[in-house]
Image (cartoon, rainbow, N blue to C red; front, side):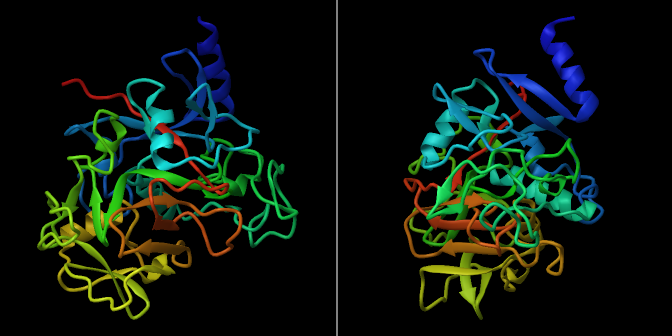
Length: 357
């Protein structure tokens, strides 16, 4: 038996579902396998349809592998390893490239995959904590992880995976670490254009052959009445598409934007809603990507979310950083350009076995 098989056996004995995956240069990352799941399994009604995170290039895949740890960068490639200072101060395109450089199937974690984890955690009744308050979680009284970066004399980033079990998505050593806090994480497969939400179809962001460039031709708007994907007109005013309005201090999805003070806004995840122009299929798609709560009173209801509906393009990031105790698993930000780079903004790679043509 090869040494890497022995390593995986040892890892699986302690952390079931964890695997050591190797990129095309033979370098390892510790990954968590998420098997294919349906809407019903995730608590979204009775549909036996597969969650879109498991559809790539129009075909179902049996599993997705998510980096167990926020990533570091070595030789221009992303790696998931414990007890490391997570990479930060990199823009969206750089994060995408670090992941794609690892070989086919490796990609920047998509918002569709993040939405899957929100639904899984809500369904299983546990929301992970993390470093959202200068080295600890806001509900904790002591520092719980190893500091790796200080900001104005206070703990900022902490070493990957060094927090308590409550910082893992399933409250066990087998879980995905640090989805809440530490550094925000760039997301693939989603953006807004003047407040119009745009995505790549299903989880096509998992295949780096699909361009996520600002001028990419595969960005699609969401048709509000039936949830189908339509070609955007480029100005954020595509007729009948889902747009991010701000009404009564809430992110409200609508086919128009009436907000008189268009710009940066925020509200809690549980307060995000839709007006009457958004049909059930579009709502389900928004719930799938974690941009609309399935249960407004769920465990993630108080996590703060941010967006900007007045810029030509805004990219998204998830999970919160170390500085805001209101941030958590369901938090997202959509108020930065893809060129932004911050000491509190990193990324996480994922992997999928790409379907054959």
